[in-house]
Image (cartoon, rainbow, N blue to C red; front, top):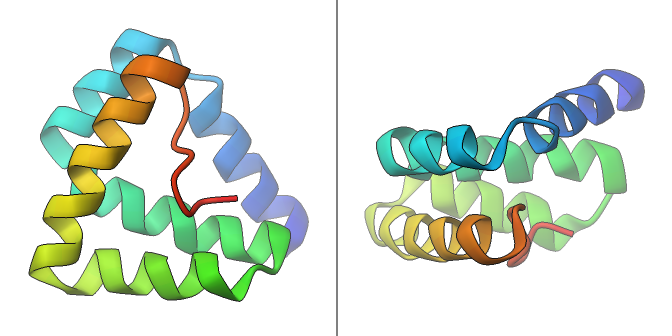
Length: 84
């Protein structure tokens, strides 16, 4: 399963920067949570899983993560806050 989850995060990270910014603007809260959950299966980091679940299923977590993910996509071309 790790190979499949790795290909999902790699596929997202290989998208053009402009497309990822558009995705973040429209579906950022959902994408950020799912990205972190999938990243957990790749890295095994429990913190990433917990943050992914909180981002996916809580309203305030969605808003905060959406803003952070949008900023990191613009600046660093990847989701980087609590997603490693």
